[in-house]
Image (cartoon, rainbow over all chains, first blue to last red):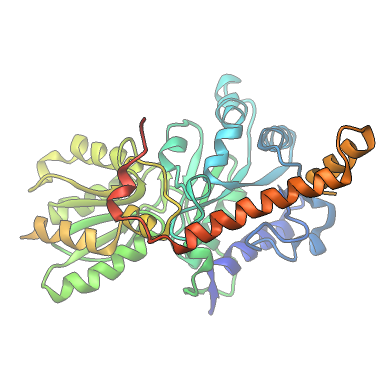
Length: 325
Length: 57
């Protein structure tokens, strides 16, 4: 076992999969010289040469190349830098990449991994801070993983690259910049896509938290424990396909649900999770579902406004205290 | 080369711009940016309620 950071986890996952399978290629803007703007692919060009491709600044062309190379035997990883830029290539994701297999009666496959920065908290303003989970969840045929720890990042990214379906990986810039580490096994390991992880067991309220919010929920859990309230923190880890069973089993145990999601509340991942629980586990609920989300606005640049915009530990403590009281 | 210096070079070569005029445009733009930075640095942070404004006209 050894300890690694989130940034290192991403690098090792891609490095190991490129070493394991010569069909894996990596493309993106500035991936050769910088290893992408935050440096998570550093050293891979030196190691794998032309299998690491610098693209032009055209997400449409990048996704076209991704779909084409995936359909013809490669296993491309494409770095679409920020969540909002997925809009530039959404047609290629929603048509070429995720519909063709279905439309050809299963005769084609698209083993592609899209890797994208998400998240607010660094004053990167509206275009560089979004977590567009729900936008991508509304795309049948696409799997979506949101790793919250270095361990989850390494295991899930390796699974995403080996997966025969297109997978969107969302990784929060706040986690990339954090000094947090996880223990990682020395041997090769992967984590299953489609399986949630209970990050902390508890009995009074289930808190489903996504991405960076997992850490805010865990911090809130310690403070709530001091007040005698025990929360169970469920990290879905995969948003599509969602692990309904694990979430429902937890709600059955606690009877109360709060969802913490760093998206504008309307039509967010939290909406889908709330609807699913209301539909499938209504009888178990002892109180209305609560959602801690961002307001329905773009993400502000000003540090003061951005702090007000992001869901915080305090917001969760308040909501859970009301539910548990 | 960056597109802005390249465009400046091209316009000078083609005739509609002179070196002196281009320098003047650059000075004006730099002064405008410096003034904006001064204004921002000297202004207080906005009140948290402002997060909800300017979404719609």
